[in-house]
Length: 412
Image (spheres, rainbow, N blue to C red):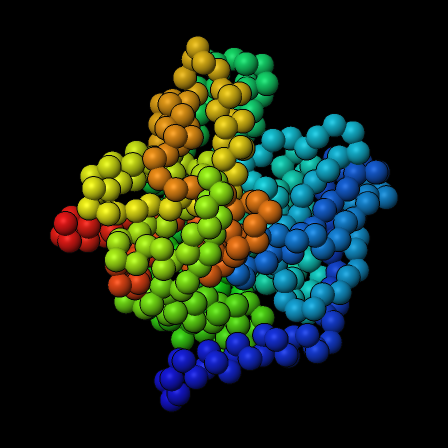
């Protein structure tokens, strides 16, 4: 490139605070033909917020005034991804393996959704980006497979309501088999890669797809993706967010000084990075997720192996009370299987007795939540190993834990 990536990022990031706040509002239209929508039902739309972490904020609602149809004219500050959820006037939406229907809206788009209320999160999308025939085909394949997976999820939920343990296990096994089916994934990849190859300069859909997995991708890979995008995509709102992710990853890359932090532990102590000077410390973000359930015993084993040498772990989790509540609600006379374990109950019991310092993030202490932003902790489980000198030695998902283990084994 003629100019360095750093200078490009600097220029683009300056625009985040300026250009889009002053930009004119974008007009757009949403409409739908969805069989089963009833007058009085509500469609709720949330904006996707990607930075500093992936989350959603309320945008608008559409109250259905004509059976099977809706129409909405709106404005937005910039290109926007939305998550649509369905809320019937009576009863509840059928269980689904998706939290909602996701789609992207750009200036002047007329997005149309077509489908049924029973499978509303698998609607066919047209208009805007979705008029691309290659993307339409890729989404059709993905949604068709998703409806099969969603049916297993729905039947499993119904079995739970009936407390039918045999049916629960049956549909969990079907879900697991479906997720492990390499042919399904290969089919989706085949059609999606055709779309990607037809757009070497990138699209908003491609950018957002990659961003979802940014935490798992090497920094150099992210830079390569970004540099391949067209100037207009780089300077778009989500292009700038992507650039911010790269800048943060560079700031937190291995060998860089670990940012200072101050947190309040569950025992009331106030802790900061300087309290661990001279010792290895592992920041471990854990919680109710398959990854944490599968790896928690390994983290405990690592702690016990090296604690005598001064190795410390600081656990970060949203709410221990929530985990305790889930644990207490589990049946004690039969196993509850989840991906990663045949019985979650003993795993949660061990989690509730972690031998290290714990920090709850969802508390009245704002500094506890800010540590996730300082270190760009965006997933669970997430690991950051800090050296006795105060530099970052490993940061990321399971691969970071594996690297931390090797470093400790070598050092001690």
